[in-house]
Length: 107
Image 1 (spheres, one colour):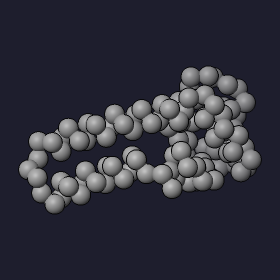
Image 2 (cartoon, rainbow, N blue to C red):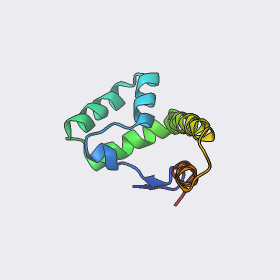
Image 3 (spheres, rainbow, N blue to C red):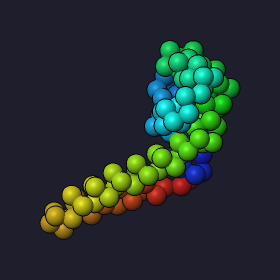
């Protein structure tokens, strides 16, 4: 699955048996039984692609993307504040550019 709003393929982590931050947030904030059953299948590696797609849509519909975006921006701001105290070097500039790329990317 490709997501323009996220800027990277979605579902790959779940295919590998990993729950993502958006899914964890949506699961914890709703306690939806059906979504929890799919999440258990994801963790055991038995979820179908259709079930993963449903869990992704569930995560989007229940604020998971917004929450993950907020957390990502908070970590970017923390990283930038740490970099602010460093001397201006090529390494610092590269790290700032990398942060911008990772957070702001859209494909």
